[in-house]
Image (cartoon, rainbow, N blue to C red; front, side):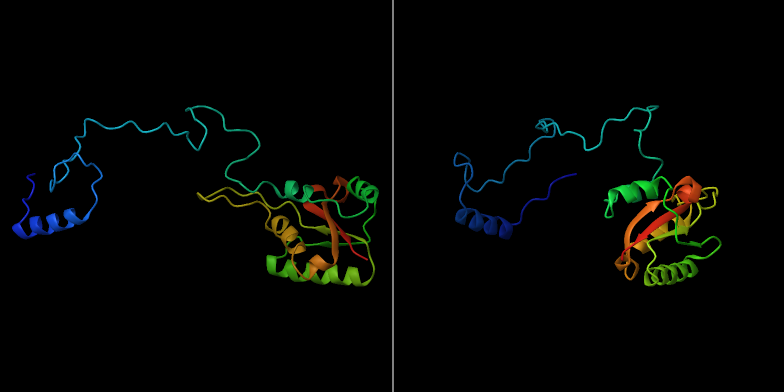
Length: 195
């Protein structure tokens, strides 16, 4: 590919611009276009540290994360919540020593049905002065993963803790914890209500 020659007008324009500019390299002759650098003299780039750790084919993935789930399990998120209630009562509740004063079973409901039923149940229990209620969500059905986007097991198990954190339930709830095995284990939640 041959380079195009500048026309007379282009050369005149270039000289006018070059005369008004300050030279970066005063030793260079005037009105010359800089020569392009040859590709064989590349300056070495500084060594950049990779953003991701090195990976070798056949190596194991780091422990602690399963598959593509970046959020972690619902059980872990509920367990990491700070304790708002009396610590002794919280310990007794987690060991299954406190008896729930009411319970609701959301099995077989759609998310819309369950949200309405749960909101009504919690509001009534709070109005009646109850302190500890049990919300049974179930663990969810296991199904084959048919697509590239992973789906969570147990829609209600994942949705219910989010509903607890939203109005109007948030104003009634003091503490949420996963139930003891005798009250449903990972398929149920203890909900400790405010006075």
